[in-house]
Image 1 (spheres, rainbow, N blue to C red):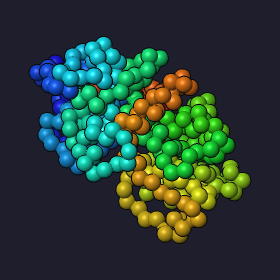
Image 2: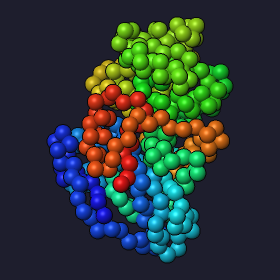
Image 3: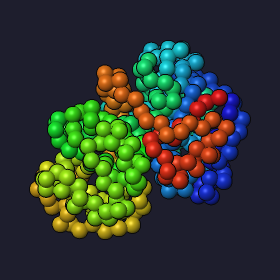
Image 4: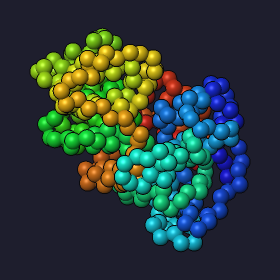
Length: 337
């Protein structure tokens, strides 16, 4: 079979290599999945830059994919040959709160990922893909989709009519916009261009603030709420955006810390964190149960992921470059041959 490997890290993707590997054979409780599509996340760039713990040369990268079960080992009962499945980001985090040992089962980081024609997985680490979704759509869900889901469901439940802030037009932010609208919430989005602003509005954003034209966008967002502030913030930028996010947070707001696409350097005044009832949650994607809950909710609403562009398997490097360039709107997908 064909599979991509990183022979080294931190060399501007130069060591991403497509090679020939032996096809896997399932043992007891294991399944072989033919991967039909993959999707990239910012975390895949973090891995390539050698900024992720636990990396080893030879790693098969990428956490997200969807495919078909083609072989099962003895004792497999959760799926059968022919089932369409999505592997869970955390292979050993099945449900409940996060535990340190669950972080050792992250696909495409600590353990081999899915950028290969066939992968070997434990039966507990896959979830059936609803019939209405294509493989390419299903490939977008395990990291970005689940992260958006847990960002909106951590802490007190969202109520219809509350206001959610999302940042930019990457995978997590667009999923969060779609899900928030599905929950009956108002959505305010930030972006850097008029074109993306119109596309965000077409997806359901009630208001969009251009952070290039309005660097102090936190005040502008607060004004859009009549001075009350937003109820939920999906924070993907890190220190570069967190101060503005906190500036527009309302009393009792929930802030989901998802990523740091804007870098790690910065300082935050403690006064911004002292708003009554404010809670800040670190989000580490989610469990298999979270993935199942997301899929169930999406199926009821017939919600479809937003795909930016699809690259053939042989052009995985170009897909990485597309994500790296940050001009994408939605998910960057790699289609199997």
